[in-house]
Length: 95
Image (tube, rainbow, N blue to C red; front, side, top):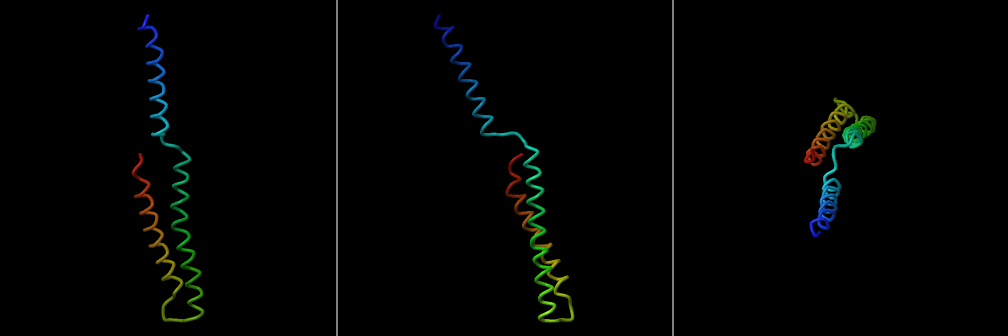
């Protein structure tokens, strides 16, 4: 009889372990991919647009032989690419 009583307890224990493992290691989510795409987009767009506005202001205030706008747009794209690369590297540890 003691074998009968242990069986349901073992099943409950195994089920609890499976539930705990599922909670600790969730599978890949499509929403996570969309969130990653959005984060990468914003991390590139914000420095680029910021560089464009700063460049337009500098072109009006301190005219030079070169265009501040183009230089700071390129700088914003480079900074955004570095930010996106760092963010993906940090978040990329999970499969």
